[in-house]
Length: 177
Length: 404
Image (cartoon, rainbow over all chains, first blue to last red; front, side, top):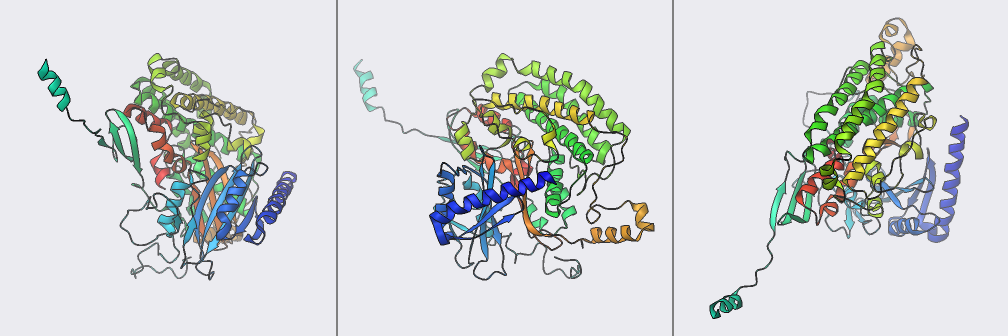
């Protein structure tokens, strides 16, 4: 238990430190922040997400130089913020990790590409395009990566059913999601 | 004489012509379904275009329809050379979400299994590097030990390759006497087998000529490409999740992180070789500090850990929990967690978003080889075709994990 509260405190300290730096540089572009288990989480507006990530990467003090992962998100119920992207950064020398998210409406699925910052973003953005249809402006090779190229839907979107919806021999009303 | 001059004058200036070579999708040298369309200048690779996704099985989508305990078999099929690490990474992700704390003994048991899995994975990768350089002998000998590790899994969970080992909250049963016996045998005799394998390759002139300075990547490029695991360490960055963010009591163990300098095939081989020895050390410590007779093999998480079947018939609470777990009606906290484990080929992360429903709202796997395989064209450009084959096997790209 001792160890756990120590972790909580480090996360809190990291959250506060990063939030101060981001707020003074970007102000209202940092829409919200919270602590999600052992990760500080920042919600950033899409207009500023590239600048925020660039700042986090290049600031010598923050030094979040490593892109751990990124993925697309879909919340059909949140009107005007249906789609999102999640980024996770890592400052290896000081072992600090943070998560950032940005949300945008479903009729305007355009994101800036992060390839200028990290080469690793290339395939991860293609994956997000492949599964969610999020388009990355400036991506040199934005095509499907895991699915076949001639499908005309984006399978990780919530409206895409996992099973054939025309089947009537299965009743999922009791135990479906 | 004059005729010759005349011919020289007329000789057309030929434009350089490249040939296209399809390496894969199913090629015996690529150990899996990988397609690379190579642009070749003779035997030199000028450009490469990898195509992936041939065995995509929609794991992230599937996971959105399955209760948490049913996702474990999916994780088996990511990096299937070391399934137990994936299984336990997933268990620990869920345990982080529900805030479960496990007894030390369970965590040590997990460490033993995970390190065995790491050794099995490294055996495959390193012996296959040998095969690709033309040295089949080491492969045939050391594979006995991989087989032996699979026998240990079999004693513990009944399965060999896609293990589905352990449960959320611990193990499904205690290690049997036979399992302990096998682990002891492994600890006693494997170092000799490993040494024999190393002697065949490490200072082998042919092997060294083939692997040193082949398929290398420098540390800054490796970091930009999101490398983790042995491939990043071979480039000289001492990043290891087990040390940076210890999970499952790894902080109790004393081991070193081997690093290379060049990030080439030879360094990757050597890093894995050393890691196997470190893993052995970890297993030895764990085995020494664990009680073999104690019957503690799971934590107290009745809402997620199936009760013993006998109790289900006689005990009301056990019956309720059994029903809730089997029907997937357990209450899951709302929240999002990311948990990373040091997989055999890099940082394997699970990003789990739970909205309180019976299944994850979103589950994203950070699959290490999906992220670092995109550096493959850069690594092989300007090199020989035979080096490209070596680079791929030394990067330990596993098709199952790559394509999810």
